Length: 126
Image 1 (cartoon, one colour):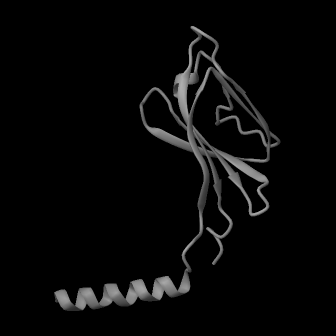
Image 2: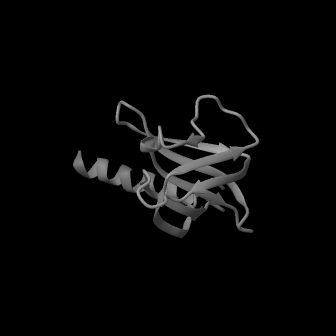
């Protein structure tokens, strides 16, 4: 029985890998920055997603991913944040128009967040 399960697993994995080619994603930039305010500007409005992280709610934000295409144009933004329950959430915001990052001055409240620039050229291509 164990051999049968192993054989089925090997056949299924080889079939799945031939039907769905591996995706390609590359991290162009990965760094931690200190910010005191972050605002994301988008053409699409989504009332469920918080796009403005001022000093009052900056502690919710964990990281920002800028998603770029193969011509290095920004396609969207992926936000990572935690609300009061402590669960990590991520939200993709398409229609990126711009952003504003305010760096802290001496003695001002700040938080260190992770900023990444990622390419996703062939991740969803089958």
